[in-house]
Length: 178
View 1 (tube, rainbow, N blue to C red):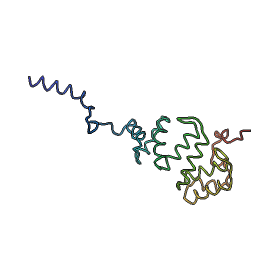
View 2: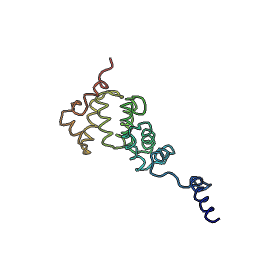
View 3: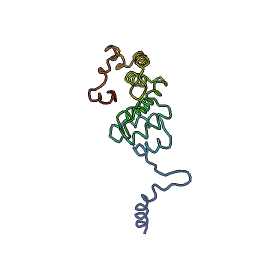
View 4: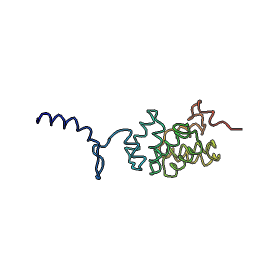
């Protein structure tokens, strides 16, 4: 009799494992992609949640990464802003949108992020997603170089020749539309 009761109790335990009460959920998911995305959607972001967006996008789950990066960017994480720019500039997890890409980089640059300065500087130099302003663009690239960003220093050393830092495969994006 005791043996039967013990067996029934053990068999029923998984059915009750996820039941919660007014104090919360028992045995919540932890350290999963679903948990990271749920946290981001609820606006509960921290460095670990934002860093997980990198792994999610490298996995090819760009729509999910976009949810994480957007929440993190809105919370002020500049690295997430530059990732949102990368997603928008390449049509990953959403439509190709150079205007949105430039805006994310502008926000990161204004917050002092060297990658944001570099990216927005290049956007200004090209007039890609923003009105062309080569002087302002070079100024931002120079700031990124002073901040120690090696690729910005490389662009300076190449006399601001954008082919130095842009793959040939992307030339179609930056060609004049007329």
